[in-house]
Length: 185
Image 1 (cartoon, rainbow, N blue to C red):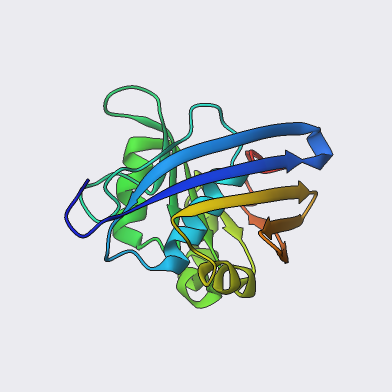
Image 2: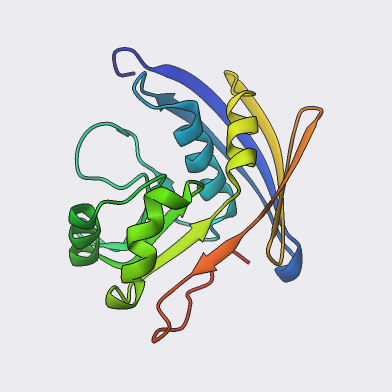
């Protein structure tokens, strides 16, 4: 465990209603003290709803060149590079050089505004927008043991955390010239 880290055990049941895909994801996560609860919630939501059996969560969120989540192709290349919250243009270029597909999960439209304008210049980039209210409310419920039920039904994301229940629209943006790689629905 890294200095200043908190250990969180996350158990998330995921139901993709439209594809009838059901799974349970469990992970013990070392959360660095510099990571906000909002960033952690966005990582957990991306981890829960992104459908790839080899999806991994980065072990060192504040260190190194790894993305927040990823699917490795080999030792140096990624099949999917996934960031949450924000993605600078420099980091986007690095991700495009190392990965076939680049994803950004975010809830703050202002942070992704530049990428929206440039999305057609980046054919490997897909943006997934989640409502900010859901992220904020879930961030208030972060505990050392998380048990969430997540349901994706077309463009609606529903999360049950304890007695709390939240809904968000899921919006997927991708370059108009390239078909979407839909690993969400």
